[in-house]
Image (cartoon, rainbow, N blue to C red; front, side, top):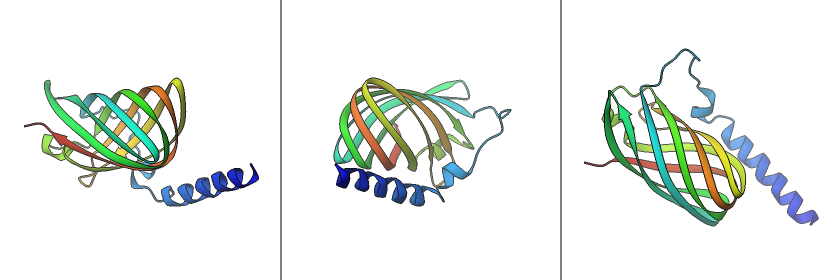
Length: 152
């Protein structure tokens, strides 16, 4: 038990140190800023130490709907969940800028049903504020990477 507490403490310290310079967490928008687009997402995740996430959704940009897919990995993650999420997209100058590799940081525990809030940012400066509802069992203290790709 002592070893487990010490290990979790080390994970928390290492993750905190790694995320201290996280670009998406250091940048914020003003409350008055309106999002450039909104999204809805359905995803799943499976993890035993290292996790894999997959899903699909749609964004509403300039009044039109566009479909996209996501896939990604996480570390220090255990569980199986189904995820439903909504979010706001900021700094989206053109639709194609949604494509890319996003970095995310999160910490959470889901038992039966719960939620999570995450900020993701890609190489084009686009960032997504995501609120999710999870169904399943999951523990994560993870830095994650997610790839988003618009469907043609």
